Amino acid sequence: MNSIHSHLTVCAAEAARVARGVRAESLSEPSVCADWKVWDLVNHLVLYSSHGLEHRALRKQLPEELTQHDFTADSDWARQYATQLDRALAAWRDPAAWEGEVDLGFTRMPASEIASLIVKELALHGWDLARSTGQDFKVPDETGEFVLAVVDEHAEVYRQYDGFADPVATADGATAFERALARSGRDPKGADPKAWA
Image (cartoon, rainbow, N blue to C red; front, side, top):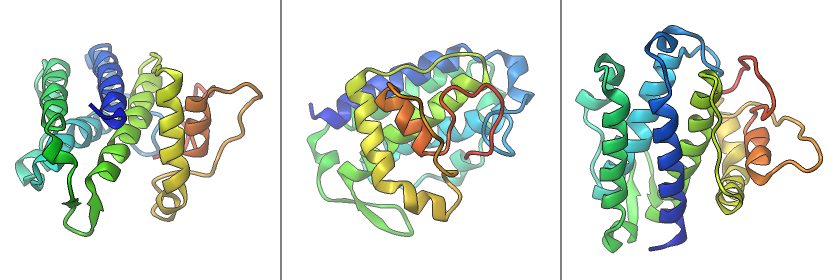
């Protein structure tokens, strides 16, 4: 299996672990993402990093029944998220999923680039959820380096659409993942909600 799938697997496992640690009462609390409660962040993460990941592999558009769905309405949402992540990872084990382009509706991208962006989605929003709920999100150095490369490649485009805030300074000795967080406008050491998306 290719290295991108390995990074997807690592980040999916960590995101699923963090999801299991989210208390029901936390869902109505502010998240570290501007204007989002934890509820908004969870629904975004579940939709795009699990259902979206599978649908991209299968070359299907996300239906409205998913884009409008409140995944947290089911108290078992974290387990269902983990199950859906497994389904998505299985879909990307098919070599055909990596061939050609994926139609996003508004543009087309190579399949490998889509998968790389979802690694970034899992890592950054997984970290957002962890930080919002008093947890940590950890990845091995090689995955941190991969996320950093994806952030660096796409940061300026994301900033044009307010997807990333301005870069944050990092201390000497910061890990690759901490640098990726900082370059996406997140403060790796900050504890209070900041204006990042």
